[in-house]
Length: 469
Image 1 (cartoon, one colour):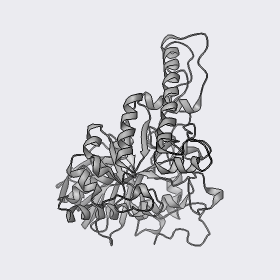
Image 2 (cartoon, one colour):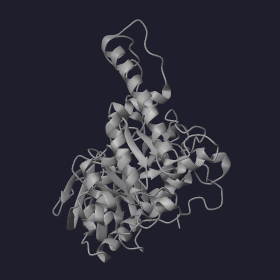
Image 3 (tube, one colour):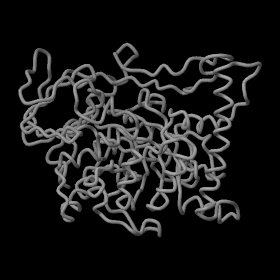
Image 4 (tube, one colour):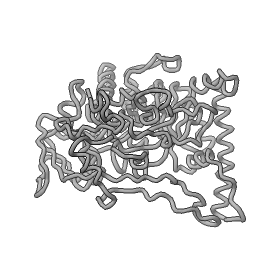
């Protein structure tokens, strides 16, 4: 996306010397004994934060993203980081002060399940790059290699939804769909320029109807749920063998390294705890089987996505330290999505399990605040008291945990990235919208400043370019 008019020149002027962060990537391959023998990060982040100014937002209700609430609060940020959060903060010289009376401040929303860039707008076949549906397991594909940074969906998620971080996943046709990538929702010419510095990769897995339907219809395995698990287990067994060979070579050396297998590289990363598993799975019984399979092969499921029946196994999810990413009220569009309750998230919260909201949709990502509101309201109707500040964890710190970036973002704590949204009212209202959005302390959107409305190069000169209504 491009920030139109005057802002564009300012933002494009950002250089490596502007104080941003950068992932240096792994060191070059070092054959033989000791250390990594191939690069774990051949497409490193080149992200640099945009320029910002020291800013103090005052007189706001703060939902800190970790379950805390401050009335008539203030937040000060500078140099890309949150400096202070409280009720009596001095501005100091050179600080821009914004009076937020009657408004709310929250951490930027984090969506752990998006296909923006891989299924961009316009949604036509020529731009459809989200499912490598040619084999039941394709862990060798990387979502980032399909991401189109010009997708207008990124700017809509920022301006309409206050989304500052999102994970782009390959689709769910396959048992192992490939690597995900976590990005910051900023303008960049390349996906590397959007990559969240040092965020772990994810492995998209899927169980249930999608893989068995896609491949069963072609007369090949899997065509059943037992076939799904069988193919998974065979693949994990090969991955363990591959991992052992490389571990031995990297620890002891040898005349020549084992043969590289790009697919097995990804699974090895999972087994070594470097890559997080995100498993599309609806039914409670299937999630339980997958958690047992993870124990069998020595990996961990970071989160189940679309977990419509998570409420049935809150205790198992908590025991396995696995989160459930869910919708507020999407259900019934296929059999495995039938046994839903709108109180899913509230029940998980009530029983001590980790739950979070997600979109899986280019429109839904623009209203995740309303999805949180709906999920909370369903809990209240079910007799489960969930405060607004508790509910906001479903869009902030819990998704940050799932992505392995909770030490950097996901809540309003001093030292964390200044990923912040000023809402023009209570964000649990359908009438409320983001007024201003900062990413790493840089003002990326201001509803009252047309020059701060991001428009991608693809949209320039086309009808609707820059329209956010």
